[in-house]
Length: 444
Image 1 (cartoon, rainbow, N blue to C red):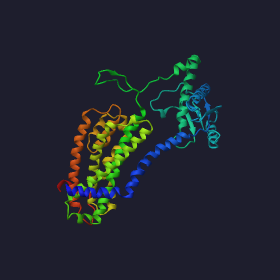
Image 2: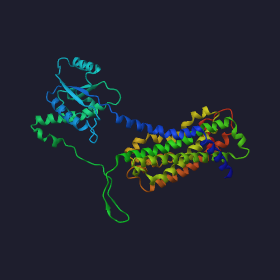
Image 3: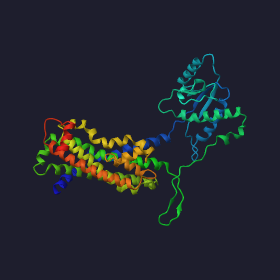
Image 4: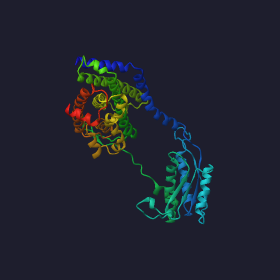
């Protein structure tokens, strides 16, 4: 144990004193947070240039209602309710008489106006849009029943979403007019429900009193699980990922051959693994303390999931041990750092795969797939952490069942990594293939 701790101390001190580590420790959260800063800056200076839309109304009865509905939406959305500052572009409209004899030529002329920036876009309302046919596939809807929006905008076109509401309301109002319903009833018929997203009613375990349900915080519902998962993945990748190339480089420089005179292969490997865990704890404490200070300064400290921190550190240590053991074993089987990079996905796969499942898990955190994935040891740390951070949490037994699997998986991978390292550290000349590495892990 003394030799293991000496190896761990040597790796830990050598790394934290290096400028690249300190640079990455500080720059990583800045880069991660720069996206949110960019969003805030863009919201502070939105594009509020006027957008002029032409309407070609083949029904002859819809355009006026769409323009009226758009005017009401302009009134509601144009200015900030607190500061009075304009925060959205104003939409203005003009009506164009349909050219039924040559509709393609008319569309070309309007498209040219869009290219000359005289128009932002144009709407074409089909002749039967007020009474469209019903089809299962919207793409098979006849042209006469469609409402088509033509524009030349790039990127994500928010105007399409903005115009959609006035078009729907305008067509409904035109239909109600045809049915003889007075305009005074339109607001009642088109009014939306004021449904709020609430949590569950709970009983206070100490007093027995029934507590009122609280409105769910939409920011916390998405941001807290997302940030915890990304922070866990980022720290694991930063701590364990570079070890693959470092081990291969030490082997190429024959550093291990000198160290084997004073320590066994297992002691060398565990020293590196414990050194990686030390770096992980240093980074995580730095990031958690920084995040806490940021939340405190924004008066949002209530969002911090302090009750999940013990689980965070347990999953973090287990994930780093697994990745570091794999990195040490696989790195020792490589002839050079360049060869080690080709096997990086073998080491980082268990951490990267859950990131691709982020949205499916967040949409159904207690669904069958999310539950099964969170109980599979390679993916438990990230997916279970995210599920625990979401409103409602997980059943009491699942984190503990996942922890048992994680402990067994960590032991198995560490054992296999040690067997690979014992053979691979002294091999020179060529990089072992994956079947050879698997055979070393199984047979030793």
